[in-house]
Length: 238
Image (cartoon, rainbow, N blue to C red; front, side, top):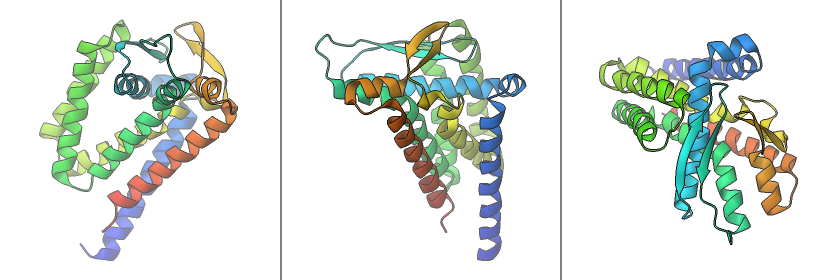
């Protein structure tokens, strides 16, 4: 394939994925769209809460359990020491919206190589299944996450190269944009999780680092867009 044709194909793929991302964000704001995207909603919640959980473990806190509710909300429960540092609190809170974007960017970059694509899909599928066994303690998570994990593993084992490349890029984009599933989440000091009001991630960061929640919402949004740009630039670089 000539370089001009390859460049044109890459531009078309980026346009399709960008269109899917924008459509997903808009559809998530509607009841019908939320229903159609329900598997991606649960996957988005898993990415988000695993970001919190992994950050909690890396900072020396215990990751106790992960709850995913039928409405698509979720919570990662960890142990917070009584003398915990505010900076650690902010890091764990920020890892919810930023962790999925980092993982999504790595998934997109892995699409450069067929071998890396297959391996990344297999790792993601197995991670969904193992995390359910280790941390998930809710019916919705038990029903949906293993099914998603098995489907992704089967894609890694049996899917064609073109489908594997497209779906890993799609999953990467979905991970990156998952924070905007609730469009105003980053710019709200709190919200409902499992029917209970809780402090939002940006609200928790603001509590620890003083600057207002809307500043952190803007900063996180900018970082996610930068990660998307970087990952596509690297994935489609000749």
